[in-house]
Each structure stands twice: as C-alpha cells, then as structure tokens.
Length: 366
Ligand code: SF4
Image (cartoon, rainbow, N blue to C red; front, side, top):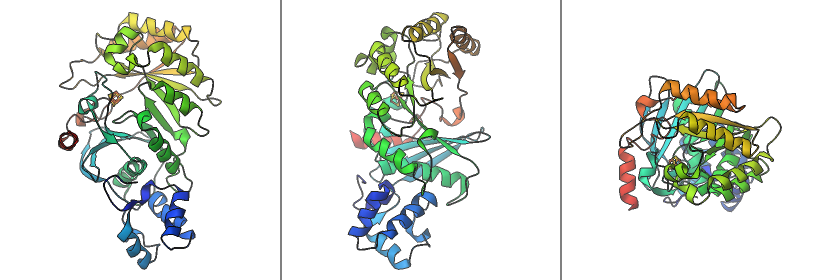
C-alpha cells in the first residue's frame, strides 16, 4: 500500500488482493483480472490509457486508486546505452533504477530501499543512510517505468528482461515487500518475469538467507563478499560484525544444498585497488571456498567504480585478470563484470552519487 498517497496503489496488489479490492468496490470479480492485465501486462499506469476498461469504471477508479506513485525526476543515457533513472516517491524519497542493454536481453537493476542502512565503505548509497523501505508497488513500478521509457508505453518487448536487485538498499531488510514484488512480476497475466530471471543480492543478512532458501519459488541469490577474512570485511562491510565470514559461509553452504538442478549462486567481490585485490587475497578466497566445500558457486569480480568522495581507487586491469586466474587455477569459476554506465554514474556503488533528489530526500528524512 502506498505510504503517502491516500489512494490505493493498485500496482502493489497481487491478483487475490485485486479481487478483494474490486469486490469491495462494488464491481464484479472479473474486473480484477482486467485491471491487473492493464497495469502489468500492457504496462499502463494512467487510467485514461486503459481504454479496454469502460469509461465509467476508469472514472470511478481514479477517485479512490492510482496505478502510479513514482515520478521520473531525471534520466541519464550513457554512451554504452545504459540508462539511469532518478525517480521520486509520492512522499519525496529518491529511487534509482538502471537499464542495461545487451544484445539478446536487457537487465534492469532495481532498488529495494531509498538509501541504505548498511555502511559498506566502498558504496556511495551508504552515505545517504536509510530513508525508507520501498513498497512492493514501488519496486514493481520501477520496472514498468523503465520498460516503457525504452520500448514505449505498452510497446512490445523484443526479448526477455532480467532483473537484479542490486540497486540502492539491502533487499533482505525489506524482505516481505521484495518477495511480494517478485511474485507480482512473475504473474503470467502481467510482466511475466519469472523468478529464474531475477537475482537478489544481499550483503549477508544470514537469517534471511535461510528464509529465502526455504521459499518454494525463489529468485537466484548473490552474496556480496568483497573480503576473504573478518578483519578486512569488518572494515569494508560492517554488517560482518553482526554475521561474520564463518557464519555467512555456513548459511551459504546450507543454501547450496537447496539449489535446483543446474543452478548456481554467486559471491560478488568488489575489487578495490591495493585493498582487497592482491594475489594473497585471491589465494585466501580460494582456501575459504575449499574449506567450506562450496562447489556450486561462481565469483563475480566487480572492478570498483571510483567516485568522490570515496577514497578507493580502481584495481589495475592486469591485477583484475591475475585475481581471476588465481581463482581459476584453484578450480573456482570466476568472471569479471564489465562496468556499464560509468559516465553517467550508473555503475555499481555509484548510485545516489549525483542526485539532487537524493540530497532533498536525505534532508526530509532527518
Ligand atoms: S553496497 Fe549495497 S548493502 Fe552496502 S551500503 Fe551499498 S547499497 Fe547498501
């Protein structure tokens, strides 16, 4: 439900909730499916455009409900085609979403919170602190807005869309809304982005990794690691003081046992020049994986996107390759993630860096 609008945010409703809303509204049940399709399958957020619905119904709906609570404040388009959107909630908080095109599929990186309460030392979003959790409807609406911007309102999609919950926020600290949003987005009568096309990245909220593992239909999991020992991880990712490397790897091992056939999970490792990217760090990481007998895991190496006021610099390209080779020579699958949208501050760790809306949101949260 919306936080600041008194109108019901229909984009946040599951099919069952939509039925409940429609019946309570004095309309026949079949209208629920029609409205759900208009919003999620046709991607219409304005009742005036939902011409498949009777005019009287649209007028009645607009008095008590809305399909849209986010507004796009600004958009930046990178020379590599990446688009970064700065949106704003109805109550004035910043939301950032990134569209990353590749040849055969698109990826949308969405936010689960406005700001973030965790204090990862290499991340600009951390500087905002937590502004608030996003509702399920605000999570879903980000995807609709981005797809409509790229392909036109209700425009046909040329290929599948992958989603990654790696934008602003720690998704597992907004667990219920996150899972509700992924369930709404996977509906056949809607966006139809199935959990298999969604990856959620956590900084390591151990009890939630276990809860996530127990879900019947769940997206893929990525765990942000970025250090092979407690001493360094305590400094880079203070959440490690709550759940240390040992506890995190225990939960990861349990999670591994719940993987579907052919499924793997990911450790993400942000490479910070001279801080966590030496040969010794790579070797210690390989030892850690061996010790815990993790076999169905891959490591995504993410060269850091240096940006002021952060004090970290990027790893040398040859050191990135060395890190990868050391892991591979120890039998670990490692991939280097090509940074996208660096020129528009859309790359990992850069969100909230250059946002007048973000600054305004922070001011209103204090
Ligand atoms: S890296 Fe992710 S979890 Fe850490 S502070 Fe940034 S947004 Fe939050």
